Length: 261
Image 1 (cartoon, rainbow, N blue to C red):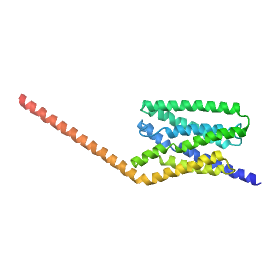
Image 2 (image 1 turned 30 degrees about the vertical axis):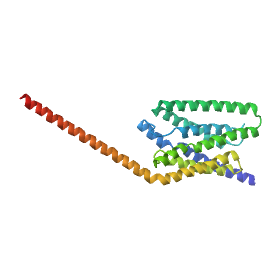
Image 3 (image 1 turned 90 degrees about the horizontal axis):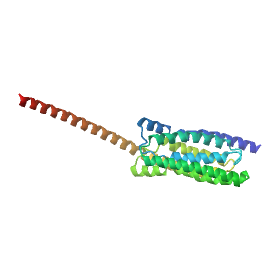
Image 4 (image 1 turned 180 degrees about the vertical axis):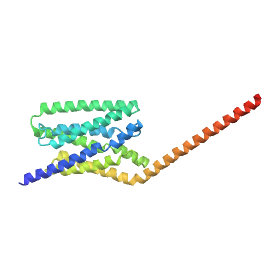
């Protein structure tokens, strides 16, 4: 009876985790809408999306019945995550204006595909029990899950340096924090160290991002306002110069006509 209740609670938490994880995967959507409109990736980094892709790939492998039975919820959400990240990375690749960055993206995706192929081959040919497969793939999942949560560290460094959170999307940070928290709870009913450890670490990273966002939100508004004001001032100066040049040309033409007369 207790076991049945625990499974019911775990499944409920897992469903909530699926919903929040879906929100996490979709949270960069406004960013990519902006990229498409501007036809430029500006200062955004592809690292979080590449890290999320490999993370979803290894978790789908972990959740397969022949690796870790009774993990359907893990497979469904991470399978969805793979599709979403492929779309985002494709958009990033199309609108990236730096050839070197495009090359890096292509190389990373190729390495990820080769890695997954080799890992799957080794797991299914060398290990013949779900216990061993769970341990091997679970350890790999821990590493990549931590990498996914740690991927915004480069952006956090830029935030501290520039005192601006303009290129650290708030909803991505919030969804990451909530996602890590819910899956940590899921992992303790019953205890699954391969899910609990990386998501516990993810809570810490997510909280750090939210603290940074709160600390630099006002300065970001000020910086963006100053930039907009400077752009307006430059436009006014350029217009004034254009008008002055036009008036000078008119006077010069008038003087030439008088001389001809």
